[in-house]
Amino acid sequence: MQTVRHAHAWLDTHTPDAIILDLMLPDGEGSVILQRIRQQGIATKVTITTASTDPERLEKVRALQPDALLKKPLDFAELLRTL
Image (cartoon, rainbow, N blue to C red):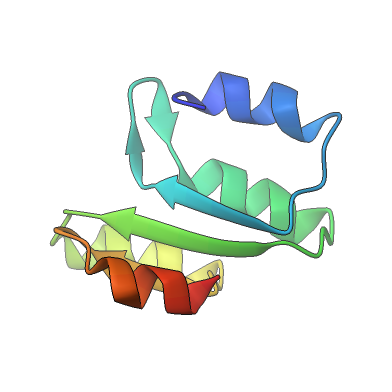
């Protein structure tokens, strides 16, 4: 999925084991998907990826308790360890 809208629609009918979310998507913040997953108590591992260095933005994401928050460029071995 490439947009927040598509992710919401997909989550309406699927419960994945793990999700890799980019923080900045074309139609919004990937963190809203993480927020939905946490609020609904969905047992899904969520890894957030980002190139952002904005401390406020990153602190808001950490408050949502992703299973991992990885900086870009990604180290794929590290990414695989989060799943």
